[in-house]
Length: 82
Image 1 (tube, helix red, strand yellow):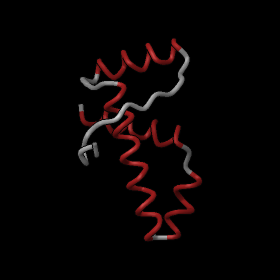
Image 2 (cartoon, one colour):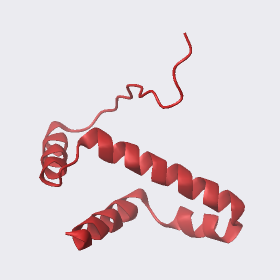
Image 3 (tube, one colour):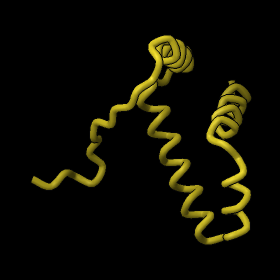
């Protein structure tokens, strides 16, 4: 059976228990969930990858920016909305 195009699949990864609890609590406080936020980051990452394929200079800039930097920027953007 072929999955539907937008059907969600389980993707597991390892994370220290304390980090998972803290992150889950932070997401709940924002009205989100751990899974929802990770899906958002994956979509953003893939969007940036496509954009960088179209614009080589941007690709260099994106490679210099770490995932942690992008996560912090995302948190700041979200806090700015509240």
